Length: 169
Image (cartoon, rainbow, N blue to C red):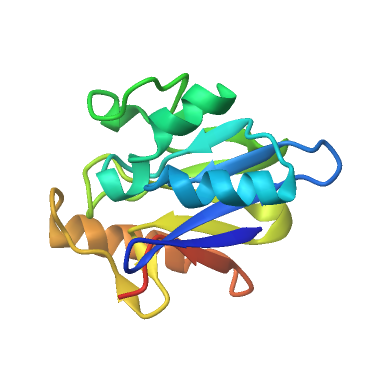
């Protein structure tokens, strides 16, 4: 996992499978630092994974797509807000991110369609703007009750889960 800092407080993640050589980017709000890191590592981008529709998480999608033509995975409930999606996901779907099984967890609150991706084989959670290390994302579209329920759901993940969040304010 490569952590890329963007803007003033965003995190973008590259997940690279050393066996299959597949690489995914999670929530690329800005394409420039992603392109730079991919070129430094000499990695090709095979997937873009989005947790929700906010521009600071999808702003780099189109530029990255134009260079590498990866698949774009995004929540079905955000289908009218994220363009060029090739694979829509819903709660409890099991997908593969760089050939690693990942469970899609619906976590409304920050946005109505927000999802997290949990890779149980490696105890990894890509939580977008639902869960941060010191709090949670702002509630923009959902309700406080939805956010509370989403956080309760994530609380039930194993204690050894490593959380990769979208920000840290």
